[in-house]
Image (cartoon, rainbow, N blue to C red; front, side):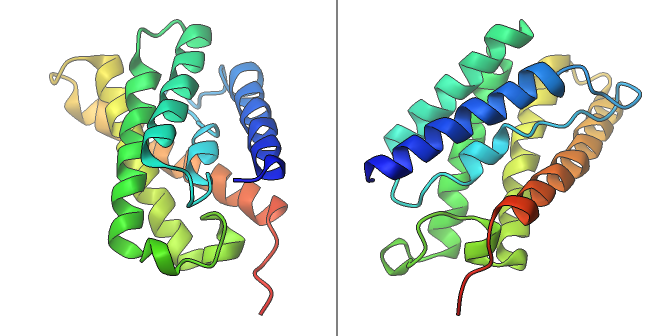
Length: 171
């Protein structure tokens, strides 16, 4: 990775965490759906990011959120799970050596691939997050409902940000 990509990703990390912590933290619809825009940072990290570094970045991102949300490792665990699903999905769906694109963004990979990628990663993140937050299976339907509604809201937010800020691939 060159220094320009590193600076862009550090800026992206700061901006997305700032938006999550100071704007979206208390935005919940009837305590059922909460947007988590910070997952976009982990989703669009470059393909060339080594797996160990990806896990470390996910851990630090989750730990930062846990600090501001007063949750004891819930976001950290969910971010590491997101990194695991990201690695698994990319290794199954793409040949890493034949990838011409620098990062898995909507403009580079197309709507269909990016949407499936984002849905699976966000779903894994939210299931881990909400079940660790509830920490009981007695209210499984309520927790699943919260997770699914939050997946929809987060996916909508992620796709909206991707449509606004990323250019289409030039053919």
